[in-house]
Figure 1 (cartoon, rainbow, N blue to C red):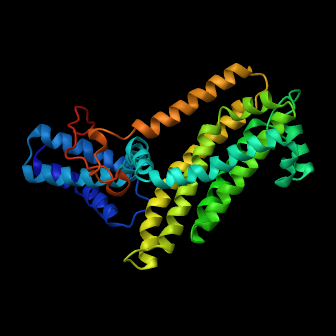
Figure 2: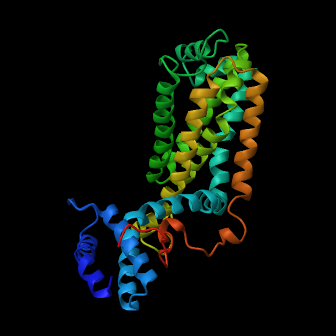
Length: 345
């Protein structure tokens, strides 16, 4: 087939694809764009094979590249952005905010450890933080004769509990983050209160002879859940301290800059809390798993979490000067591969 006949035959398809590319993303139409895109790919391959003019090949190649980016580029950018965020951006962001991570850890774990030890030595101290009905409810949750252990086990299935833990844990993290807008004081009080409550529950359950059941339940997911709470505290204090001490910037400008960091930090925090909820629902609550196995799994998880934030994101691939993939996205393809198969004449 001569080039003129070839162009005349398929020009309507090329114009249709060009018209589709000029429409806003998400516009509704009857055009089967993916099918038309594949047809033009085959036509480009055929034009190359037959040695048609470079002008025609360049036109088809540009058309195919634009259609490819329109059809697949957004998904590819999102996947690339999340992969880079997990591999480089999240752990590097945590290390860069190490001072606030340390402060948030002290605010949560300090009261946790202090209250736990106090309740262990003076059991009546537990009633300073929680009332007897609440403590009795926790005792019932961690009875060793229960089929499923842990809070909220009134749900019928582990899947239902998974949803319950997601709503509860992510809700707590978001509150910790959002309360930071009150000059960071809300986040600080939230961390202190939760630390006191966690320590009270632990000390009381140990005194009640339920240590094995309690530690077997919390071991698997606590590294992810508590670390996520610490990071939520960092995100909240980042907002509050920007308002409290904006430096030479206006408070609005300082808050905007801090929010960029805080929101990116909360992406990873939400992912950690989601994983913790999955483990809590399907592993931690399972009373048939042996206690040593649960403890070994919990220690392994703690080591994995620590190693991730210490070592991940270093090296050439995680250069400090590299732009985040969340902002830049992947590069567009430079050339369309030649296709050896075509149904065209």
